[in-house]
Image 1: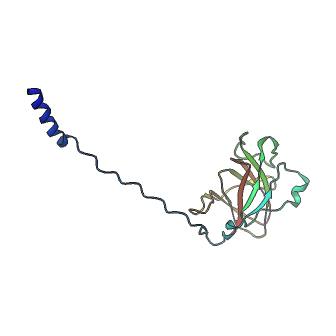
Image 2: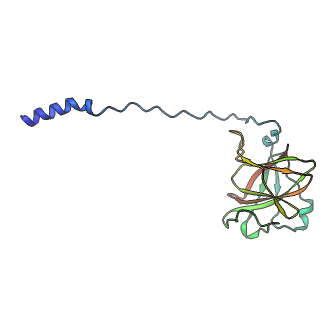
Image 3: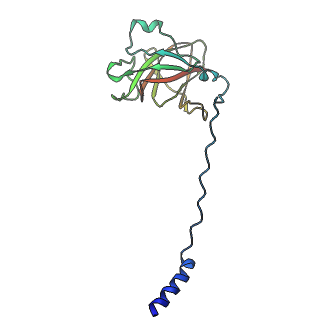
Length: 178
């Protein structure tokens, strides 16, 4: 009888000792992305698509006439590590399981060159056999599809964009001079 009385007392007191859990609110949902992303001024070309090949070996005779990367989102086909010969050793060690390539960029006036990618990859901008130091790094606007943006202060001339360690055999890229 004493045990039954203690059990009833404990059962009555338990809600006072152990608070009941309050319902947990669901985390707020991220806003849905619009069908057509809102792009900043000068980035309208990201909504268009072109395609191009990349150079796999610096010194290739065709590289002189190769189509340059410009202000239109361009799907670039990339190459396996084993077939790549970069103009300058990349600042990031190439991963044998990833992809890369090179594409020329022509700059006609001094300014800030912004290179955008839709996937994570290392990029080096090269001119006259030297890597150009980047001025800033960032991400694209939300819902734009731009994963990475790297900025360079440039003078007029021809450059080579070296793409290193891309996760897939293609990547979309664009170059805008501001």
